[in-house]
Image (cartoon, rainbow, N blue to C red; front, side, top):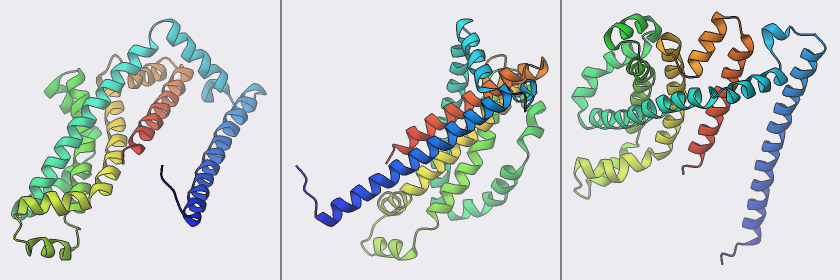
Length: 258
């Protein structure tokens, strides 16, 4: 059984109280927003046709669930995000490692990465549909276009930002470049990689929804597009709320990775 000093115990208690306080404040803000939204809609202060209401959103979710549409739409979006997230993360780390290892290659590729990252991906939508067809391939490619370059740039910048003293010290032990990467570069960038993964996840959300808006016949992006076409704004806002909830749950999951 672990024992702590009085100072350490007090610090842990203070830290725990701080986390609890933050959660309570976050919950109060969220609940207050929901209550205010429902009150404003109930007393016709806001137009429920345009802004919906919490009760109408719950009714829409219930209707989608009872008609067996909710889970399939959530499932396909989840699958697309998961696939694109895994591919972009793995490719991002591999390509960043290659660029770090081959300095000349990184200098050659750098302007192309910058241009491709700044390119408005929506503009490529029609071409992507022609190249891959109106299917999941187009959605995944759109997501990769949006997330991959951000991942590469962030991770690579972390690799080259390792203090030179660490590398010089490692070289003094006659270590190879691969050993320097394994023992110095990668461990030093652990926090940076985790932060990049969080950013990458949000980019994959954006990419998948953009792809679904263009070509999908299933998924939350499709529900947003369909709802806007038939002026069912309850469906649109419900889909957005579900996306926010899903994004928050995946964020909490990544937060657990230490």
